[in-house]
Image (cartoon, rainbow, N blue to C red; front, side):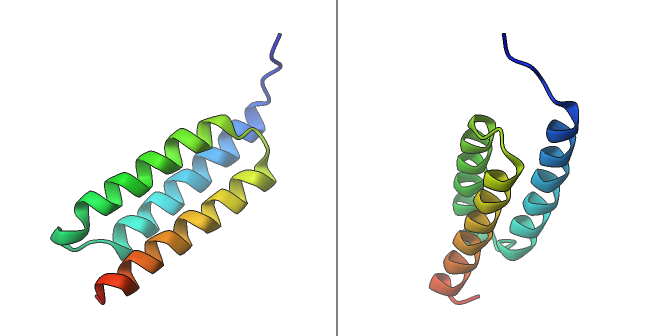
Length: 76
C-alpha cells in the first residue's frame, strides 16, 4: 500500500505552478508555444513519477534550464 504524504504533494504542486508560470513567461512568443507545451507536458509526466522533493526540485531546475536553452536557441 502506498502511503501518501500530503505535505509532499502540496509542495510539489506549488513548485509546479511556479515553474509553469516562469516557463510560460520565458517562452511567451507565439513561435515558442509548441516548445513550451512539450516542456510542460514532459515536466508533468516525469514529475508524477517523482516522489521526492529533492528530485522534483532537480527536475524543476532542468526544466527551467531547458526553457532558457530554447529561448537562447531561438534568440528571443
